[in-house]
Image (cartoon, rainbow, N blue to C red):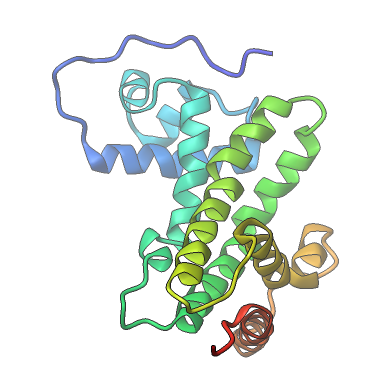
Length: 216
């Protein structure tokens, strides 16, 4: 299956408008969630964003590129790059709390739940789309976390022999059982703010006990 619409020629020379780019991303996120990947044409995304199809192609070469950008944009809303680049004054525990809260909000948002359902439904029929999603979303977040944990190990803040495995441990604990209940439709809504804060705090404490650097 060809995932891309036939690409229109790009418009040379003219600087791209960041407001239009954001409008296209927002429209793409809405349509991909409500109509699926195959049901969201570049024409429909352009109409939803209030721009021409040519403008969509001038910002995003094809539908695959736009889908990847939309997934990445959604991740960055809750997990901005500075979360993974704490200042020298920020403790590793504070950094983990920020990442944990952001990740919990990300994976349990109604948009993410719907997108995960779409990905699972299309996994067998469209594995290339699943890989695009993995590369733009989960894998990017994992790489950033691995880099942070490696740096924490090198700085003596933590002892992390395998950052990849440790990152997986952290994110799986943050997701917890509530994420599965939401995906299955067994829980109508998120836990309240106090429950979420307590859950993230518990996970960070467990993680710190497991990976804290020992004196000497």
